[in-house]
Each structure stands twice: as structure tokens, then as C-alpha cells.
Length: 145
Image 1 (spheres, helix red, strand yellow):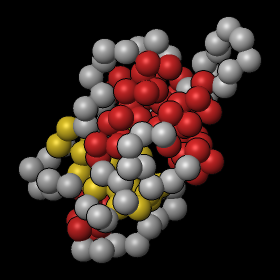
Image 2 (tube, one colour; image 1 turned 120 degrees about the vertical axis):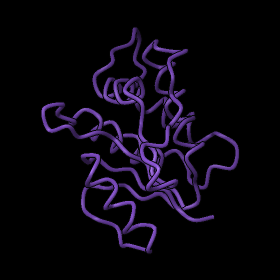
Image 3 (spheres, one colour; image 1 turned 90 degrees about the vertical axis):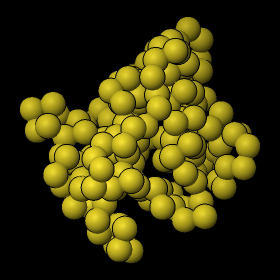
Image 4 (cartoon, one colour; image 1 turned 180 degrees about the vertical axis):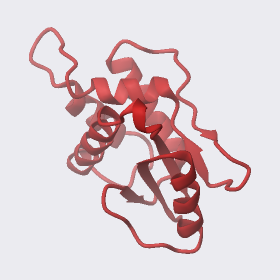
């Protein structure tokens, strides 16, 4: 299995990035590259994040964004919102929602990393999602090999 990269970009820049990745491009600053997972695991993270912020049932399925690249997928707005909310979502009690989601994601079948690494990934995704400025027409994208 290859890897999956998550990044924030405009549509045109995302297509350029996908072309570079299709050709074996190196990691770039601001992107998160995870070996040995696919788009399915990212969708599962969306489901877990949505449930954690009481937004279950929304569409967390990644979608092809352009016929120019079958490996480039767009993250639905519902998932972007759920991920961003993980940074500030408050629960009754002493639980940390972001840590809970990361632990649940790491516990998914065949995940190639543990809870500590999952926490790092989920925090990075949440920060990316929270930092998206609609005025820039940037969105969250997933490229998977």
C-alpha cells in the first residue's frame, strides 16, 4: 500500500499538487502524509469526528473533484466542520474529544499506527480544517495512491 496526503489548497493548485504526487512528488510543508492508509480510513475519521461533535449522519464520503485526477478527492464541508470543531468542542465531564476521536481512529481495524500518532494526525487535520478561509476559495483535499 502507498500513502495518503491531506492538504489545504485551491482547486487549481490541488490539481497541480495531484499531478506532482502522481509523479512521485515529495512531501510539501503544510501537508500531512500518512503511509499505509487509504481514503477509506480518512472517511472513517470523518464519521468518528462527526459522531463526537454530535453531527452523525452527515455525508462524510470523499468525492472526486475533477476528471483530471482520479486520486484527488475533496473533503466534504460537513467533515471539515466536524474536524475543526474537535479543537474547541466541549463535553460534560473531563474527556478530551480530540483525544477520544484519535484513540478510536487508531483502534480501527488494520490501522498502521497507535493512539499517539493518531492524535498528532487528527490534531493536524483539525488545525487545517479550522484554518480554511472561505475567502481564499481553499478547501481540504485528500490524495491517495
